[in-house]
Image (cartoon, rainbow, N blue to C red; front, side, top):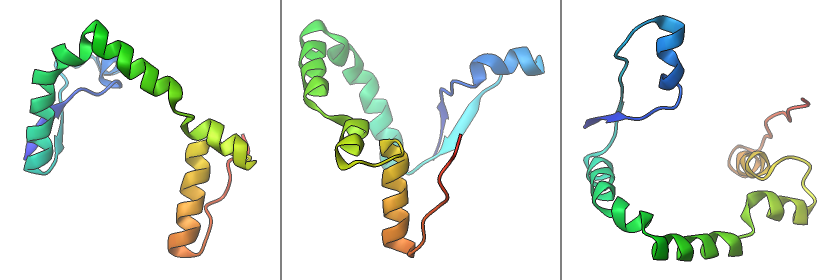
Length: 100
């Protein structure tokens, strides 16, 4: 199933290309497309103040990948470190570290 998606780069696409109506589509399993549409119904509930308060509290309790990465002493950011560990575990090799 193909669905239209909002993509941040499209905000500047008109400026760089001059094409007035740029749309982006993605192919995905039907279940994912249905779930995406279902979220549209949940959006007003998720945006309500009480739900936002609960979600913020949950987010504040989470250490997040960067804090966990620092706790382990990893040099790279949490996402890059996780990718390197997964690559090593699956393929027996590690992708090169970015030096910039």
